[in-house]
Image (cartoon, rainbow, N blue to C red; front, side):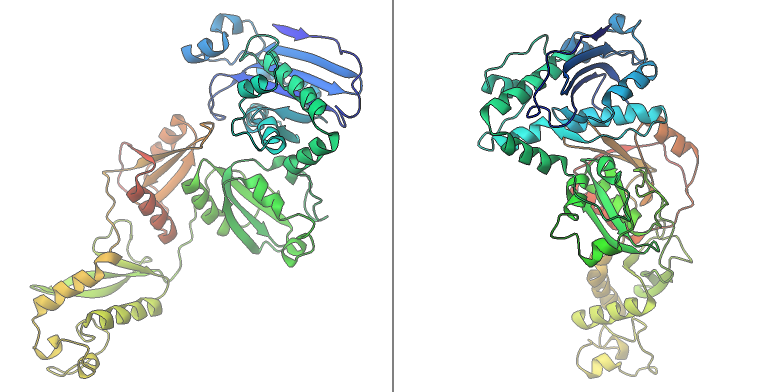
Length: 489
């Protein structure tokens, strides 16, 4: 079914200061990566009037009973409908050059971008979210769902709720209602604050504004030579990146020196932290944007080391410095602490020894002759294992107690696991595939997970930063963990 109605009477410039398009989509689900558009409803508004267009879209996959119950659209209705590929040229022509207005615009814009991306089309548009606009215009209210707004303003849905054209009409009705209630300047100011069109320095591609997603993730500013100038994570990439380009910040050294901006979106805080690590250790590509698929960090600090407890005799445990270049820290047992250099490891062990009155000679921090007291004992900070006043077993027990909080945890699973992270809107799901503290990839479908597992053991090295992030999220228990068929490294 395709509906195309002629334009109504001309619209004055206050209602349409620029070409607008009110958009609503019905979809097979809420996940950009896996679900598809099943209906498009548009109201094109400009000086010539308001023009309606709607069409059912064959998603080439069966609908769930939930979606059919919500929208009234079933598989039989979609079987003869055109596919998105067939509709794409006409739809792109209608969207081009207009401000895209939608309720929860992140949803509709994200689905359009994903559908066009499947066809190799880089879709970009300025968008305005009517949820955000309502919050700005009426901050005294706490609820801003479409049903709530229609009821609050005394409006009725012209058609069936949860059908694309009816919901797009509702947005156009809201737009006109708000212009009757409020001064045009108030609405224009709120729209400008939401859409965010700051003036970018000439060296930065202006397409940046349209590309930035309203999603969690991380971003980085790079200089002309690729040098990292700034790396941060954010719960809203678009909002935080564009905040750097407000008039009061435009003339700062950071903005003058920035030539490229990279970002990677994520479903939540854990993914954003991972993305920040990736951006901090990557060289930007020629394009100012960086895709949001995980890129492995293969670099490990050359001097990365740890203390490993080894038994020299019965009950006599002593620390030995081991390096990540020589053994795989992801598999080794009895490791304590992660240090970027040998010097830092020695400094840390000395501090620990002094705090717990441990023997410097027994720890290998100094050499003395047989039966000779260590320097720490002479300073009354050692209990005398070096001269036989304390038993070796007791000293080893105290050493284990002192080191306990620095222990590198053993991988708690039989093999690889998937950490499942979803955004607060349920529109993005990141599948973090992890094995032995190593991130194999952040994926978006079960097929991709299985393909990655099928590649066999990973060659990536242990990364201390990623280890700490994974360990923290596992202990917090906030993400669902799904074990996978394991494989040995």
